Image (cartoon, helix red, strand yellow):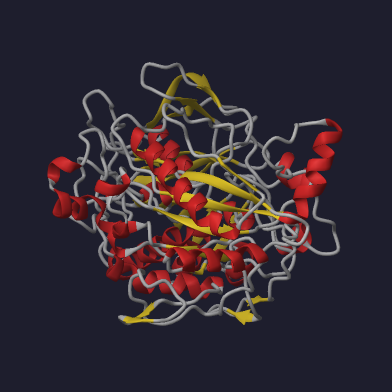
Length: 591
């Protein structure tokens, strides 16, 4: 028989960025809140603390800070007629586990979307007509605008101590920033991080090509900083261990360092770790959630009654919980009906590597996770799909998060993969090479979706989540176009050798390769309950006391990293709960 806990005002599933934001905002309002985290408790001390040596094998190979795939994973297939098989080894995704979630081991790149990213479909239809968009492409406008979200995006940047250079403050274009960005109310809280050599050369090459390079917005502190909650950050020391690792120096923004210290001691808040949420419990007519069922640290079935349920897990796990809990109607790719699982998308990522002689000291072991340089001349509305051949956009960026012998050392074209020739190639390349990446948007399609697998079950006896996804011609063309532009620009620097990895025609998605952890969609926000799972406030259309903030809400993915928008949407959602929902519980938007 299940253990039944005392009822609380709100229960949060997951202790990453969105969970921390919701906990802070709702406990500020006086609500009693319980957060359920499936992994262990983690904090800078003792988990990431100096002088403990950062271990590449532990973090980048054994994946200490990531979800255990032996208990909970998903299955993957390319098409609806294929058989899905389980994802057994970390590759494309890096779902976190433990307090902080993926927010503890992210790199720090912290972009805002462009205003036109919120109007993906209507902008294209206005420019090129409704017939221009392929029939199988299911992109949608967000139900919220950049202008509506600006205050939330700004607040998240100040919580994170984001380092950068504004390009548009209240409509005034600022030299050195991004001239294509939406208007900001103020500059970033901190100035840009210092450049590494590859970024300095990136500015030179971009200028010669006529591109408008600017510093990557990075939540890696460029100076000492105290955020609005009183949490202190120290300047980044460029140790090269951001991605896959927690920060030892309180320099990289994370839920652990920037929000949880304020919430943990509150009397109206409780954090329960090693708590695996199994499902959201619904009343008889499935219109209201009554709480959640989870397995506690001892494996005991436990019920946590609550008036509000907040799904704040990794994006596709929010979708999994909604499917398991029968919240909404599962998407059917044959009839094109249903909303849960619909519009799954990913990110289009490729790399161009440059190799120089010994006079160029790149020192790739030095690194700041999110810092570097980029430009938006090929992104958003700057991309003309009639000329580039693809819908969407993307960025080329110079970023050096740090590399080492375990994570891998790139070698020039023609170098063998083993033996004395490989050793010689490593010696020649390691300190004298760097890379530029191209990161492109990923559109959504009617055959890319998430569902429950009919064959495989996870370690808890539940049907696994099944992902049906493959690259489409649009994204392959985008990869080829952007890599070509990056290589064209890089020739200005006269490298000894250069190699790019643009997707070839007919390329299939390979989940075993890391291509960013930017998995989006599946429980999207929208204006129409027939084609979206959530309304503009991230509230379920079907169960009004369930909210699901996260990248699962994106109708498609733009050319940027998603974290900035994820945080902004979480604050937007919390504001709606505080100012509207609590006064009159029920649907905030009428269907």
